[in-house]
Length: 161
Image (cartoon, rainbow, N blue to C red; front, side):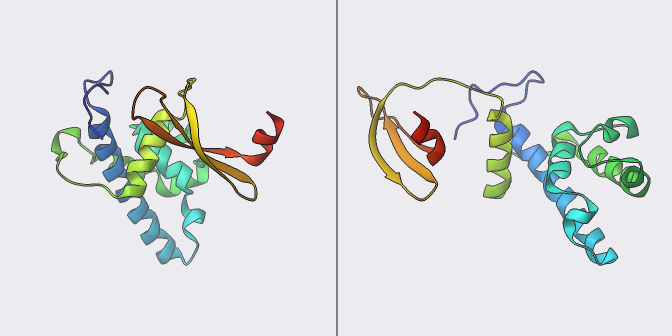
């Protein structure tokens, strides 16, 4: 995927932002895994994935900003707040190397986060479909071009249409 045309307000390309927050997210997950192991608890008991993803996305600079993130309450803030702020402060945008690859899961998570609030309508021809237990997979294609998009739909939504 090319990062051309995905310019964000800060002047960074989408792919650069993915690499930056992807690296930060990896650091946060590694920190959480060490904490969980040290305390003898499941990873999510330290902080759930959603909290780590929000921290990587928002990069809070103060404890008040950290408190606004899902899963962070006074106890977690007291226990982990300073460390989390240190980790996010260490994520400097100038030190990122565009040639450093990120794991597929990090890349897809970041892309999905960026696209979650987007909506649109697509016109095309359904060229193949596969109905399984509770879901439907289909491919929609432009009638006058070679562009195609693989799609997913819950079976209950398909049955309602």
